[in-house]
Image 1 (cartoon, helix red, strand yellow):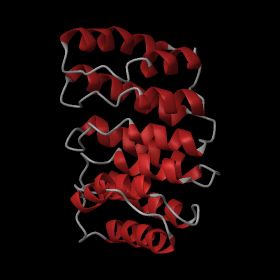
Image 2 (image 1 turned 180 degrees about the horizontal axis):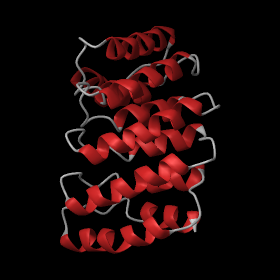
Image 3 (image 1 turned 45 degrees about the vertical axis):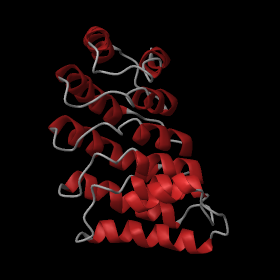
Length: 211
C-alpha cells in the first residue's frame, strides 16, 4: 500500500491543481490515502511529496491532502535518504506557509529531515531549498526547518555545484535575514560557495541573486 500511495502521487508531478480535473482526482485519492493501513517508508514519502510540485496550497483539495500526508509523515518509521529529503521538500515549491496545513506538514517533516543519517549531496541541498521558495521565515515551523538544514549543509559535501547554489539561494527569497536561523543557512551556504571552484552560468547566477 505504501508504494501504491507514493506511485499514485508521483504520477501527478506534471499536473497542475489549477485544472478542475486534477483537483477532482486529488479529492478522490485523499480518502484512499487516509485509510491506507501501511505506513509510508522513506521512498514512498519522498515520492508522495515530490508529486505535489505542480500543486498549489490555495486549492482546498490540496490542503485536505496535505493534512492527510502530514499524519502519514508523522507515522513514517524509516529514516530518509538524501534523495528522499530533497524530493520531499522540492515538492512543496508551490506551497505557502500562510496555509495552516502546510505549516503542519513542515512540522511533521522537520524531525524526519533531522534524523536522516545520510550526508546531503549537492542535488539534495539544492532541491530542498528550492522547495521553500513560497515560504516565509515568520513562523516557527519554517525556522525549525531552516535550523536543521543549516546543520545539514554544514555537514554536507565539501562544495556545491552552480545549479545547487543557485537553487538554494533562489529558494530563500521569502526569508528575512533578521532571523538567526536564516543567517545560519546563509553562513553555511557561503562556506560551501567559498570552497567551490565551480563556475555558475547565467541562469544559476540569476537564481542566486534573485533569492
